[in-house]
Image 1 (spheres, rainbow, N blue to C red):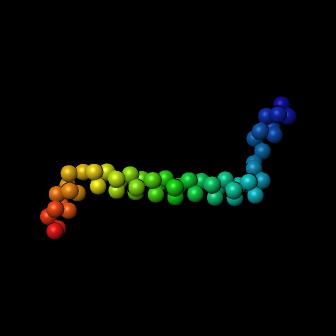
Image 2: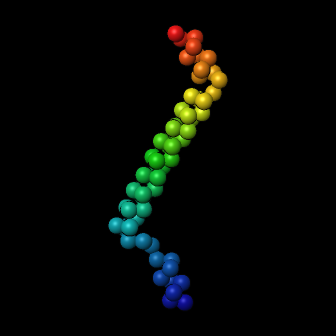
Image 3: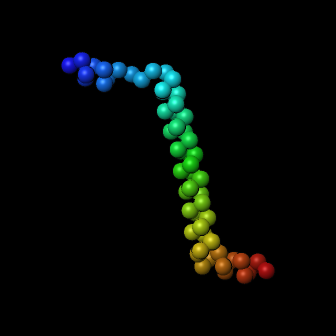
Amino acid sequence: MSDLRSFNTPLPKENKKKVRCFLICQKQISKVQKIQNALDFYKNSPYYSFSKKRSK
């Protein structure tokens, strides 16, 4: 039973801050990746080449 109790103890505050920072960093990285994927998709789309030709 003592193993289960130790498993359910809350993390120390220092670890919580590190975990929170890590999760925030992961969110930022995933946002950047989503934006990059969207830009790549747009640049490979037929509309991009059409609008590029039209703007000249």
